[in-house]
Image (cartoon, rainbow, N blue to C red):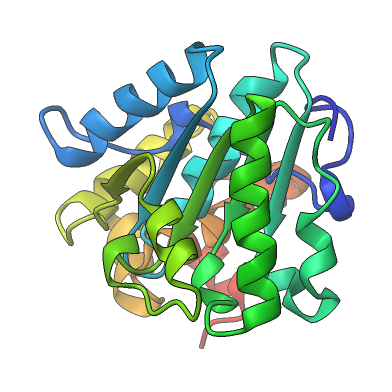
Length: 237
């Protein structure tokens, strides 16, 4: 992918809203500090490698795509590859990325244990270092605890910084939902927020997807987001 207006590697588009400004953090938290680290990482032109890990739906994909969007703003070439989506395509999907100045590989633990994939990851890390490219990887586990078939790959996964993405607490999620609504230009009342939080999956990724659906439909119908409207749109009983 060559800019935010163009498609990403393998025709995967950057999701609307997956930017640093839409990643909810409270001051003096680990995630707040992590965003500062990532912004410094992106501002540097030096070759480097970093690794994000955390439980599923904690925000890793959001941050990887936010990094890609930030780099693309500078008209630099980027490649974003979510392995959950392309694991069946085989290791070839992470080869030939020598022209990208920034590479983000999401969910690498999906392919670990497969020797062909591990060789491809091993080669990718070596090539990015030789070419002075920046590489950002993610998984659900600390890279020091991942089970790799190739010992040399295990050592290379910890070449750079390793940072945990902390899932939002139950107290933070409603605040994050209301902050996201405010960024999109509308108010999400406490009643509607509480209703969504009680009736639907509580991970922030799913809640944000629901919010996006409600926002688009409210604009189409030119109406406010109320509990009856939520029931109508989401076909809730």
